[in-house]
Image (tube, one colour):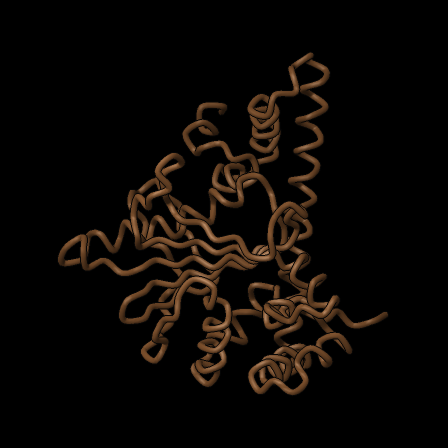
Length: 284
């Protein structure tokens, strides 16, 4: 059987490649290319922060992000999403808003707050999404920005890969995250930084301890997804049997009830259904 190859879109692989101090220049170059559409920032003083998001109350479960970094003027939150589901954007937004809230408390004035940039690399988006979508908070009628220090970028990995196959190399470093074998060799050849990325991803795939850890985690994730899928299907079926309308909220409630019966924690149920923790707790 062919040995499993863990690609750069795996969050643990991504962190193992880009967070070590010896690869700091690689991370800077990757960020520089990813951010070229919205800003050119000085990454000379880039540092990696703890990925733990601070709790704001005793009832809040700890949250971690994939990579959290800081420069003199910016906070950068990088998220790897290996699948899209309706509550994904809410979950990711909660991370950057948490950091935004923390910064408000420590900034000398509101005018001296840093710029917050969240970069999402997402698989499973529909074809309607562009290769790169840029979100800012602004008025629908005036088109004026409500705040000028928050940017969210979302890279559509599937579309970028397809465009790369058709000769568009604009985001080829992003495409490389989700490639292996001859395709990875071809896209990285001749590019100093992408060749370094390829070298690192291959080195880690040859590290037995690392791949054993990855395989164990992948198996745990499969089990979790199976439980979620079973609970979801049971929720939909139960809803049909009870004659419940197919409205999105009612389906989410039924799914949540079944997940609670399967002993899943409210935080995970919230991520899947989009319901708030308070709404889920009220179903118990």
